[in-house]
Image 1 (cartoon, rainbow, N blue to C red):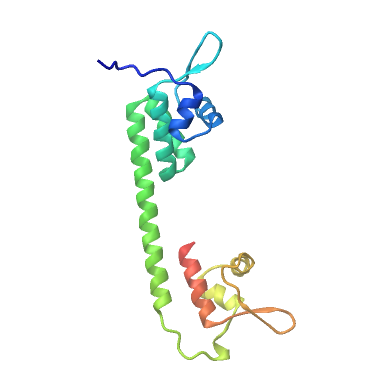
Image 2: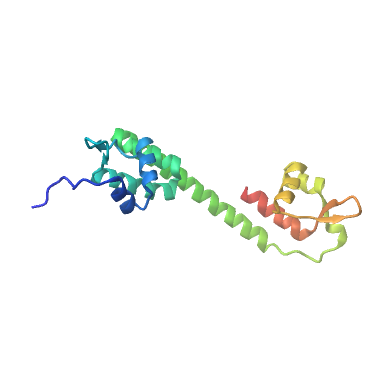
Length: 179
C-alpha cells in the first residue's frame, strides 16, 4: 500500500523533474519559493513532493505572470491560504486588464490600418511638430520612435528635416495606440 510520504529526493532529482538547473532549485529555496529543505547529517539537502510541486507551480505561474509575481504567489501558498487567494485574484485581474487593453489596441491598429490613404501629394507630408501636435505627444517622442526604428520619417533638405508621409503618419498613429 503506498504511503502519503514520497521518497526523499536530491537537489538534482527535483531539478530534473521540474526542468530547472540544480542552482535554480537552490535559488528558489533561498527565495522562499520552495520550503526549506531538510538536511542530512552531512549537510545535503533532502527534498520531498512538496518541493517538487512548488517548483512546478512556480514554473507554470512564471510563464503567465512573470517571475516576480509567481514567487509572491508561491510564497503566499506556503504562508497563508487567504494570502494565496488574494494574490491569485490580483494576478487574474491584472492579466484580464492586459488582455482587454491588448484587444483594444489591436482593434485600434486594425481600424487605423484599414483607413484608405487617398491620392498622396507632396504637400500632405507633416513636419515633426505638426504630427506631434496631431497625436498629442511631444516632438521628442517622435524623435525617439525614429531612433528606435518604430516610425522612420523621410529626411528632406540638407539639414535632415523630418517629414512624415501619410503612410508614416498612419504608422505613427498605430505606434501611439500601442504604447
